[in-house]
Image 1 (cartoon, one colour):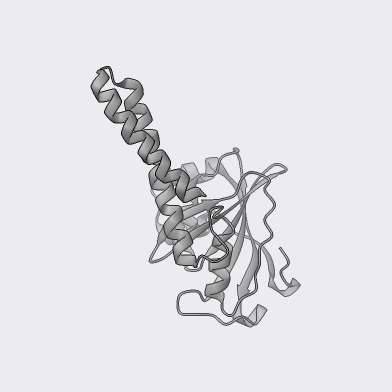
Image 2 (cartoon, one colour):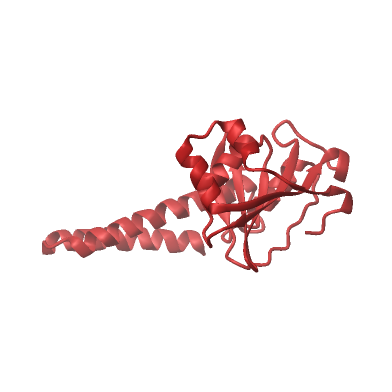
Amino acid sequence: MNLPENAKIEKFLPKNHFYNKVFLNQKLKDEFVRLIKKITWKYKISEEIVGIKKTDKVEEIQVFEVELKEKQVPEKILKIIDKAIPYPILFVAKYGEDWKYIISLKENGVKDYYYSEWNEDIDFDFNGVDLEKVYQKLIKKFIKTAGEEESFGQAVEKDAKIKELEKEVEKLENKLNKEKQFNRKVELNKELNNKKQELNKLKQ
């Protein structure tokens, strides 16, 4: 990850470290145990270690490796970990030889999650004028539609709109497939095409 050696922590974190901090019910504890094999605190990126200024919003950035028992990333478990740790976390989810990067947008709690593809190499840049800018650059690496000239806020806003439109398109396609009335099918198809055009324009 192109991080200095002194940023390496390499510390095993027991699962009950997270149970005790967020007071999980038994069902979530069981799911945590069923889906998560091991959690390792890999790196700590702080002003003291890397010499990049902290801000009120981002004091540190952590890198956690999460070994999975199944090849699926349980977002509800990531939320538990994120809730227990007050700093932004770059997750490296591993299943056997496969890996996936995940990061959350933390603003007064977790606002959204961003995922890489499985085994996608990402050239993360941990340089910046402060840790907040570093964190924003990390998130932008996950947003495929982010333009070079776009600000962090613009990139996040556009990505959220794309995700919203994708859900609307899927919902309309399902409605269209179930609709029997011809006139209603025509209306739905027109609405669907408009949404698809809007979506394609945003993705360009």
